[in-house]
Length: 253
Image 1: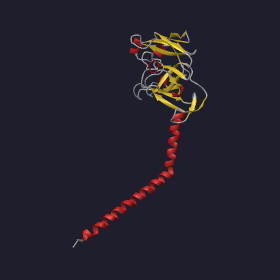
Image 2: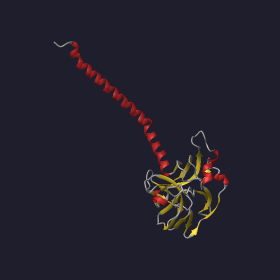
Image 3: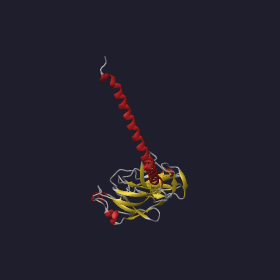
Image 4: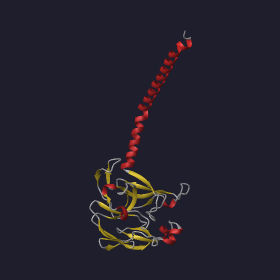
């Protein structure tokens, strides 16, 4: 004869299974109540926040020195994504357009080579003929003017760079901005005249001999431009424990 324990075992297993099912139903009910209470609101809030960042305004941390001495490594840049147009969030599709990038603007865009997000200065506009000779630009047959750069800007770069680089103020649009050259480094500092196609832009970094820009990856399509960099919001030297207070809220326009 079977023992009493053997006869009772199936009932014990069934009861344990029913308890587990009951607990699972209770948890599902609790999660449903929580979701109805604030879960939907949280998802909506997240969508609104990320949509704002995608289509209206954002910031960029600067990991490289291609825009020195204007923008330094450790700067956090405010990007106005409504400077030129309104896009569908998470896409490059335009809902409306009211302006186009101007020569001299600092813009954030997606590289036509690998899709990486970059920040450079607009040097050439659609229809321009642009060329360079030993780091000196000429646009539509006219050489761009260069003047000595303010020492205050030069002093923000490292001492080692100050002794090796040449610093100038470049006048692209009637407004001047800083550029720096490294004569000792082999670079693409000379190229023959090229005509920029319609709907395309020619981008360059202000650190001319240390910038992967349109000289290497070509023209940038208008639809790849994300927005205009307008301000250094905060800046740090290495870590957040070493802020550069003098660069906080510095205008880039």
